[in-house]
Length: 262
Image (cartoon, helix red, strand yellow):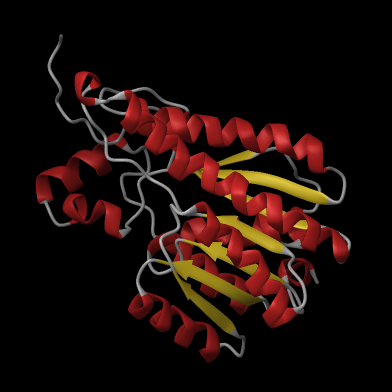
């Protein structure tokens, strides 16, 4: 049956930024498809809740509470997967982000911080994950990018540039790692995560985002997680080096900060 292609029985996945939002939804979705998971984020309480959801579908979750901006902490996740499960098959690089700022407030240091959190952390985990994946024939890497890596708007120079870099990094390393490891990304549109709480709780902002999104709504994290499952599983076995746009048809930034002309 076609649904069998979405199964991940016996596989092991690492998901970063998995305490809430897209990361948490992805961890639970992968578990529902049969994978055991290593989940990491800053807050243990959030991870414990996700681990309970994973256990409720019959899979194991190992939690790692850490500051994932710390490259040593993020490198350690592969060792956890190896020691607890003896293998690694899927990596979901979800941790990332940067607060939009006006151009003159975007210092070189802030730009470097955005690239560190969105690109360097991803590369650090991939470097240690790939050898473990190869031990069991290969695997799949899914990087969570953003629609702002493709469209342009005021205030997004740090965030958008780093997410664009992550998208092209995906294309580049897919060539390095083919044919045994597939590498794809998801360019997510506005999604109802904690980062968007101020938007979803403010009627005017929520209306703006919905109005600028052709499907006239904000995505549920499960909708991004469904794309993660597709790319991670045998269902996506003939995709590598691609950026899947799960953005409600967005062609312009869905949040306009109203920054004035210079």
